Amino acid sequence: MNNLNIMLPEIFLSLSIFTILMLGVFIKKSFNIIFNLTSLIIITTIAIIINNPDNEVKIFLESFTRDAFSNYFKILILISSLFVLNSSKNFIIENKLNKFEYPIIILLSILGMFFMVSSNDLILFYLGLELQSLSLYILASIDRDNLRSTESGIKYFVLSALSSGLLLYGCSLLYGFTGSTNFDSIAEQLNTENVGAVFAMVFILVGLAFKVSAVPFHMWTPDVYEGAPTSITSYFAVVPKVAGLALLIKFMFIPFSNILLEWQTIIIFISIASMILGAVAAMVQKNLKRLLAYSSIGHIGYALAGVATGVISGYQSAIIYISIYVIMNIGAFSCLYLLKKDGQYKENISDLSGISKKHPVLAISFLIILFSLAGVPPLGGFFAKFYVFVAVLEQQMYTLAIIGLVTTVMSAFYYLKIIKTIYFDDNVITFDPARNKFAQLSIILSCGILLTFFLYPSVFNNVAITLFNS
Image (cartoon, rainbow, N blue to C red; front, side, top):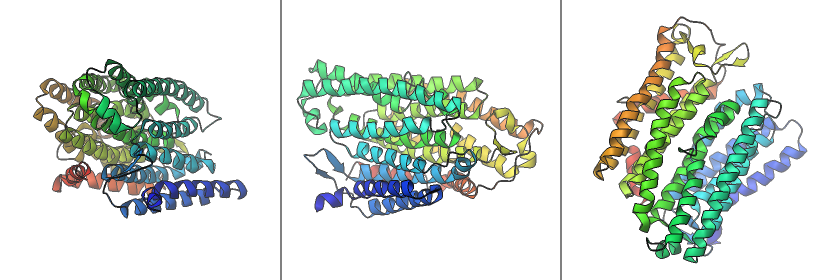
């Protein structure tokens, strides 16, 4: 019975998925019912996790862990999923994507992420990863009548399958050279003299870097973000990134903790490459979703800079960064749902020309979110970068910090370009009156948090400190 209590969120989520799947099959036109039940399931799961103790417990031959770290990331996954799902409901219905399977597949991907962040074993980790990946393949190509959506789904499937193969090869090598699939046992066996296991670590890092779309394994991101429906793009940009970063931190902190110098060089390279490409490639983009894709690559680079320190304060700064990143991107994509003209959703930067004259509230929302993404003080995005750079400088990694600061300034260019288009160009389009109340609520909450974050900037820092002390 104790094991059931420890796994109660996963058990509840699994049973709920089976139940609403049956309802969807037998009830005609059941999208709204299933959608509302999905939101209720997510809220109930959050309540279950909050009532779960944070003390560390390992079950099933220590392959499954429940602790403060996994609980925090599960709550972050659920809250971000709830906002992404509900703010995109109008878009889903208007684009005829309102199939009852849609929210169920979202729940299945969340269940996969739950097992990923709670895994303490290579086999459980891989099962969770594949459950998440299979769900995301379907979501990327869910608009079957749209050539761009189908193309993005195929691109994501082919490249993700390749990365999963490399990752699985790394896991099998790691098992072969350490004699165990358990993270704690691997940590005991893994050292610099075990060359084969170090080689395996490289393959695992490649697979994980693909999942968080870090350079040079980012090639799928811009095409999939642009081609997939905006509701799916917003999910891709936020939720899997949270689970992916949680996994990266967990691997560095437990199984790879004794080979710090070996993986640190790789993470530093990936971090620098992501920051530079995210800053440079976004400058020439004309599509907002494609620009946000390169922006997300850059932001993952900053989060990885925290991971690259190899110390707890660095991991904590990465957790703070991804938490604020979630808030900024939920706000950014919620703004996209309000860019509707004659029933068509607009995606190009040129469509924002002079909207401050006719849509001042939407314009100021874009201003706050884009300034925060650029890291302008005193907004929340500034503190996200501040904590990362402090952690990097404490470890005397000055080159990484300097490149991070330079790319921050470079990335400000394309955010300012959008703001210039909004405020100083001639008005071209007057958008339809906003009817998406949840998207408006998401924007208000996102902008409110980012604006007032400086009043209590240590809120995420205090939480991150507790995650490694449980």
